[in-house]
Length: 460
Image: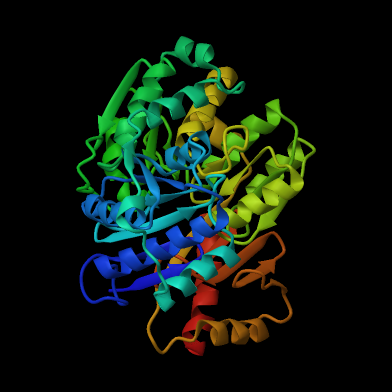
């Protein structure tokens, strides 16, 4: 098993030995380092918001974090079961100094993680994340005396406030959605999407909500990453019934996948592409996505006489570029929608509300919206990392192999073949190398992957 430390936090498998897995000792050290860093950024008393997804280890991990922060003299505002975007929005609302989300996002059940937020409710910068890692490894902590311990307060209505804020957005057309009397299937993978999304859909006036795996038990009924091979149940449900659309979220509800009325997975990339098309049709402005995301978003931007900007992979990198260019929408090709009118974080609630508004106002079915979008297919593959693989050396050798092509080395290696590309990079969240390739058809994208994979295998 493994423990991964990155700028986005600490992530690992529960149990085992300290420094090798995510054990109570590692959780306490990392929480203490974050707490002391937050105290160093603040004047006076400090508050930190905590929320967790429903995975089985969440309550244990959250309890360790809470009591560590209390021991430092920090007040904890506990959202308990919540979503990542809800925690992000709660930090500035509660005027807190930061936040911690206890979730391993799309990782399987044995994983958990601490995602760290600043006072804006956004992920930490790379330099701040490095400082926390260094402090955790140095174990240089000073805890509060008994009269100065922190306090814990529950915030029971954070999800309701989040929904209200989504409904108040000008581009969320509640009346148009209600008139359509949509029938929706929802797969919340037995996590906190089951707490947030049914109330949202009801408030939007959706007529029928077929719930799959909406009890937040933490027992994931399938691999929680919303990829087509994991979504057979919702696709079969739609095929057997008379539904307009299906929505699938990951355990912390920051990634959104869409299934059309025929029970066909339209591809995570098209979540951002289609929502982006709707937003740009109503609000002119530039868009941002990471360099592993589909070029189709750029075609959509050009259609509306706007510009798409690339960033390195990672939400914090997308947000940084979005702020620099004042983008009206951005995100990542994993189904992550960032809509700054609401907040700078990936948010499936706002993604669903905007997409249903697009369906309602266009009068088109999901399959028709997808058919009208630019053709694109991204093949997403990975290679398991082993100790003998030196990723940096591997990428340097690949640069020489593809020296005649256009290359981008900002984040791993992106090889650009005209309108097609391959992106090879080390994952920040799993012990793997990701290889993404894009072309107009699945066959062409797979052929590019196989060519690159052969070169990688030979170099390894």
